[in-house]
Length: 198
Image 1 (cartoon, rainbow, N blue to C red):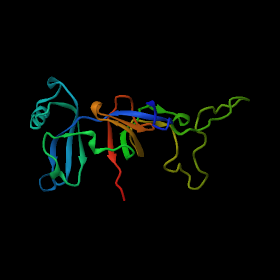
Image 2 (cartoon, helix red, strand yellow):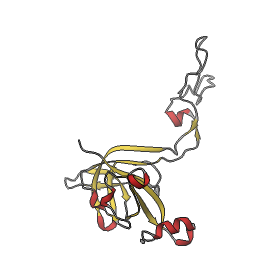
Image 3 (tube, rainbow, N blue to C red):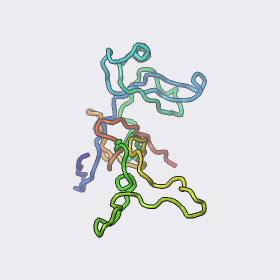
Image 4 (cartoon, rainbow, N blue to C red):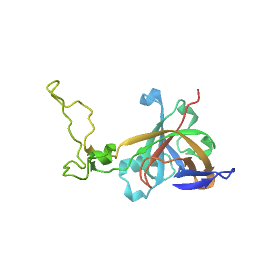
């Protein structure tokens, strides 16, 4: 993340995202594959790092080899061709987008870190500093209700942040400046989806 000053001189926290170039490695249609989608390749990769089935598949597009291959649903796949490069011209400054990524994995975490519990007293002989406390019910129903906030795996899940604003676009460098924070670590992969206008 970094700070961005707009034309009015206001400071805006933004996240810089490299968005391409993305190459169409396969066009999927409802008649052949059962659904409409584009398969996009991103992040150039050395040939020797990929296995032979992937190499043969990517050679059809003729635009090199990629470490990341993802599918994106489209309404009309007939508008796209194999090997076509998707550029930043599909986005506009001020447009709203939804961004999906994998959040940072934090391992097995307690309730204070995972759910924001306040914890118990720190003094006067207290023995419950960071534990969740009582979780059971009385005689009825005599069990722990499903969905209780307890310690467990925290992070490393698919998260979507909605309605984020595009602050700036730099086509020469394939960079998009998006207002706010995004899920995941510095070199993580994201999916940017345009919001449908009503």
